[in-house]
Length: 300
Image 1: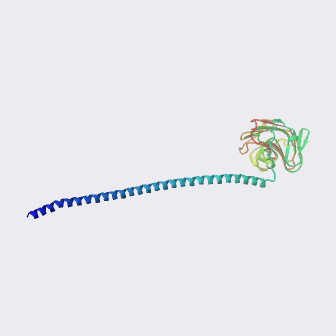
Image 2: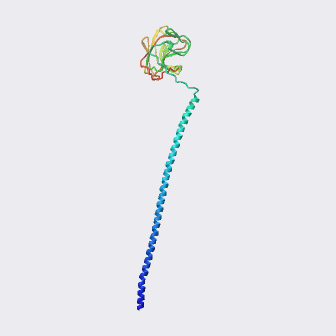
Image 3: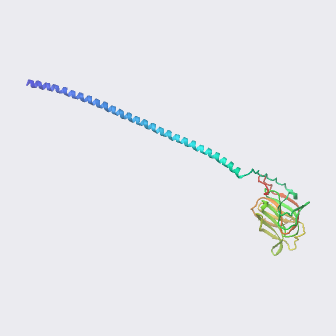
């Protein structure tokens, strides 16, 4: 019993030692496990940090790469634009040189004649060759259309006065606001003993002239049945103001008309058919001073 008790005590005494050994081993294993876990966790964190750093470096590289591409694109586009401008200028220069055999200077505008009387030598024939200056008179007596012009295209509102005597033929006219006189457009007041109006011979008319062609009257009036159309000197006056036109003969108003298409131009004289007529004492009075900024070349 004693042995058994003693043995039992021994065994019982040894048991706690065994337990302690087991507990000690477990503590060391657990510590080792904890260290391994810590090392593993630290490794994972380090790997994550490394991956994050690589990611950051990769993102930064992408941003830098994109910025570099944008910079290159800007440089390329700028170079193309500069080259295009130079090519365009060069082409324009070459085209000009090819298209023009020589440089043609811009014609200088003619001086605007002053108001008052004119010399017939200053008039310019645009149709027919029968005009002749006879001291103070300007006459024509040949078959066909005859036109002669004076002044500048910047003339706007004015009064034209001239004396005239028709010896034979269908009549004469006074141009006003005439432009491009070689193919004249504008207006004309006509003295027409050969026309028939309201059952009587002879009429006065305002007509538009387009590209050289004289159109149907936009205003017309007649004269008394005993009116002297031939071999009688007449004081002709045409007043041009805005879109309103008025004609006077020997101080009496014979015609009114309105039209707004042509606003400026020269003055002139016209005969047709086999009319024989002389003009003298031509004068012009400006109602509105010519616009000096307008190009007043006469279209010749």
